[in-house]
Length: 94
Image (cartoon, rainbow, N blue to C red; front, side, top):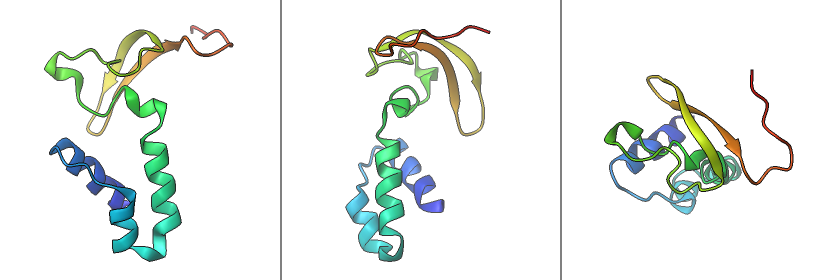
């Protein structure tokens, strides 16, 4: 969804876009927008909202992650492997 891409670009610029703002602009997609903002704010986003090239620890703001390890970096994402200290299920290694 192009709306989500705009949100990510604005956040990188330092803006703080809200779901309500986009729901007003695109009322026909209000429920989808609300759901996307909820997903975006979820725990998986805690590791990759910014690019870790600046030296910041990749798990900043996600203290429940154990031993984050950079797996790869692409055009739109940075991917880490990490354990979840909040999970009752042990993580599996391959």
